[in-house]
Length: 521
Image 1 (cartoon, helix red, strand yellow):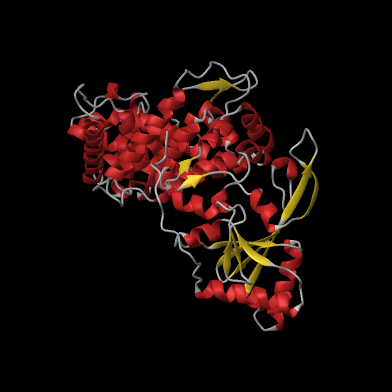
Image 2 (cartoon, rainbow, N blue to C red; image 1 turned 30 degrees about the horizontal axis):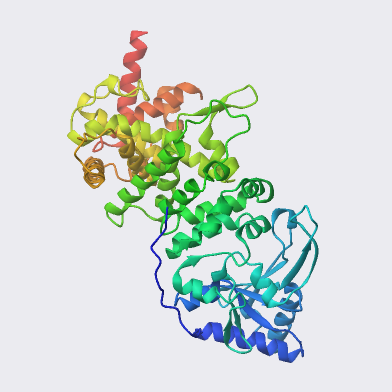
């Protein structure tokens, strides 16, 4: 799938520095002069690209031609202390190199005037014939370093000594202007150097609406690169890239590229010896659910979903087709495969728990939608997930009680679960309707159910204070145990069914109901 037709972007001829950027660069140059260093200081990569595109960027990567980053940072701090500005900078430590995981450079980090700044050395590497782990590293020239970068648009340097942009690949600026995603070296070599660059190429392509180079796509889909992605790249780094895609401006296009390049099950890997096999074409169905969720979110009011809720909505929607698929763990319990994909393949265990919770809650919402959408009374047989709690509740109050319990479980994420249930709901569609009409039907159903919940007074229902277990034990003369939990749930059902009544009245109801049951025993 082509991201966009080729176009020409407005790219600045010269970088315009903010006051803070100018102050930082002046201090770096002053450090070089103060210690009489023979060091050329350049800004590399994304900051240069974004400044040329007139975009703000608060991450600066400093590239040094003859010093390690940590050594230079120590010089900067020493100089700032000497002029009384030592308190302005905060040392954030360093990240050690890990070549087997495609992390080749030691990176020194600092925060300065609310800007995140990384310091690395320019690198040159030698490889053995059968390995992409460098056998020898040394300081490199900016030209060698530029060709080792992931993409030509990220290979540009800004020389703070000359206040000029340097394009050592001779095509970084032209690719930026024409909107092309291209690697400086042949794409397969670039990807084998760091296979995560495949995902970065996709992410930058959709972020800027640039076109992926055809040779790049062929290399990204080849078996060697897929194997390297699994062997060399940590799950955390893959998870971070996926997160950035789903949080970006074009998540559907990003995941469609992953699918088109046959990388879906490499990124969202399954347990080894997974059975039963995932049905053919399931990844396309995952993208379709993501697409509908993304479009539905944009049809709803801007205030409906905050960033966290939108992100969870997209994660959960992407894996809706897999919600009922499980696998066996060591001949023991069956575990949802979604838990493995998000928790193990992407190393996001908290997100895995949340997505599983949302999937389960969406099924519960699904059973309530007909009543919430039409104000019909709920019959006991209409739900199978909360037996017993509505036995003492009038038919007219059952929808409020069950919806209240569900919202108390979900709290501020109830609209996310509602969105997922709307995706699953079989709305009446005739064969002549286009996708836009179907989407508007889902939007209208979401709004109707949301309004019904608000009219029932259930928004923020999780803030209703329940009767405490201690009060129940005192009133009913019970020992701590499962009966106390049962009565807590029954008392909450009464509170939900009688929102205008008081806590004291609920306690009186507890006494009366318990007394009747004791007499019947």
